[in-house]
Image (cartoon, rainbow, N blue to C red; front, side):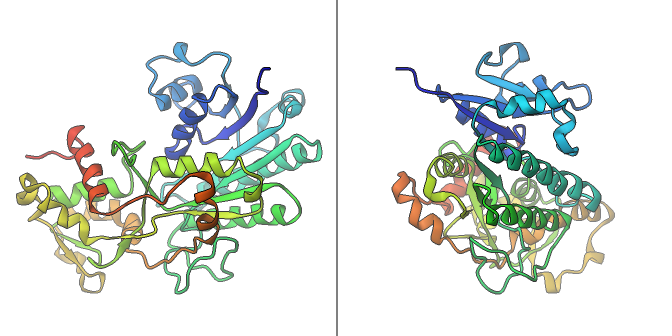
Length: 370
């Protein structure tokens, strides 16, 4: 007897988490995958999806298993004709909404347009699909920093603080988007919320899907591009491997007991930022490069001591610094209850893991050894 196809609609397929989810579901013979993508510059939606999958040509995309939808998430109805919009509701859908601008220095207008209005339009679609009995659930990918990173008490999984302190417009827009998801969830929309922390490379190979947040910062530390960096060496960075995030989203989205809940996809043991400097003990060939940089507590940092060239580098990475010295504790009660039943375990994210990440960036030439 043939297994009924599972229809999964994924937004953000070319992003950090989305591209790995796309690979995960394409390897599942029981899944028909619909991905939202758009043309960007000279690159067609098909070219961008192929690139995200590591495929050399759009002609080699898996025909019949992958359907690319040219939607405008910034418009109500996604800019589709009524007939096309309704066609998607002919089958029950698991909707995974991961589309977002994650640039921490992005403008308020763009963060609202992509992260907030895009979520509103996905919710509009999901409400209609739910009314028609065609929504399995919405899995909304939020962020562990949805309420900023200066909380004095643990951030609870199943609620949001009423008085968040935002570091940027990205956090604000993700907070407001999650508020909207929670409102619809309280009104009966079947939904699950995921909050990943800083997503880095695979726990086995060390390979990331993109070199952002931690990676440019580490390259600056190693190459000595800044003589002093304003971070507390005892501050924490919450790194989580991409494969753990994707495994959790896929597995948790498939079980009924996760409906209506939020899950923190984080490291149970956050790393000290000073561990990045400790990497030179494991990579002695880089010790002479590491020695050019000094970590300075933010309260003692004097930007006037930076050269003009250094100042430009500092301004480029300043938006990321709070995430590499955070003070947030994350509640993980929902994760603790569900992971063992799904055969999943919290990842090991200590020095051996950091070394694995570092070995990869050296191997591919992202960090030069001389």
